[in-house]
Image (cartoon, rainbow, N blue to C red):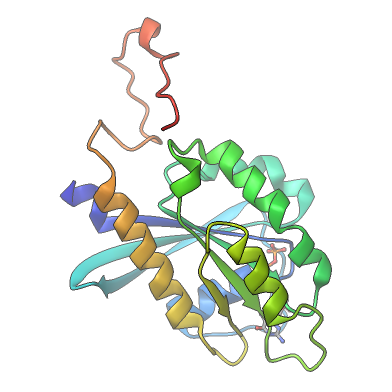
Amino acid sequence: MANRSALLKVVLLGDGGVGKSSLMNRYVSNTFDAHSFHTIGVEFLNKELVVDGKHVTMQIWDTAGQERFRSLRTPFYRGADCCMLTFAVDDPHSFHSLNCWTYEFNRYADVTCPDSFPFVLLGNKVDVERREVSTGEAQAWCAAHGAMPYFETSAKDASNVGTAFAEAARSALRRASASPVLGPPPDVLRLHVPPSQHSIRSSCC
Ligand SMILES: Nc1nc2c(ncn2[C@@H]2O[C@H](COP(=O)(O)OP(=O)(O)OP(=O)(O)O)[C@@H](O)[C@H]2O)c(=O)[nH]1
């Protein structure tokens, strides 16, 4: 348990251009690039922090939001302890895509109990003048999706970024601490398991 809870895997998902890489870079290195390029596939950065008195390493996986990179990003959802869904408040399309992102994550992450898996929603780019998704709309979406925590962030001016990632780390730690120790994390391939056991899957609770 100690090893598992020390490393928390958090996955950032959302449409291309909503600011996932910018949020990760702001949080990990306190930098912002006004001309950042689209991510190809996935990238990750580690951040050491203390959550509820425990030292943890948060491994933040930044995924490519563009549809053409779908097959490159989905294999990296497995083993996640928290998913940070992201949209941009000046891009209603990215807000309407949230259901698709939730569906895609649940499908490929292969979590045992999808209903209790921790998600956090980020409404990014709150520094922009022309906002098109209101706080109320985002809060209503969260209320309809298991009272998901919601944060309005700006990777540009750094507002709320630390708070949002800290909440993701807290949710991830709670989940990792509550997970029964059934064996290695799902992304570890056990080559010595007899072939007959490969098809055994635990049922959803
Ligand atoms: N005004 C403003 N611009 C931002 C903010 N966050 C990101 N951007 C800009 O939005 C653009 C896209 O940001 P990225 O971080 O590359 O977006 P992404 O979600 O990682 O995009 P993909 O890699 O294609 O999935 C860049 O030009 C950023 O500078 C923000 O909080 N405010």
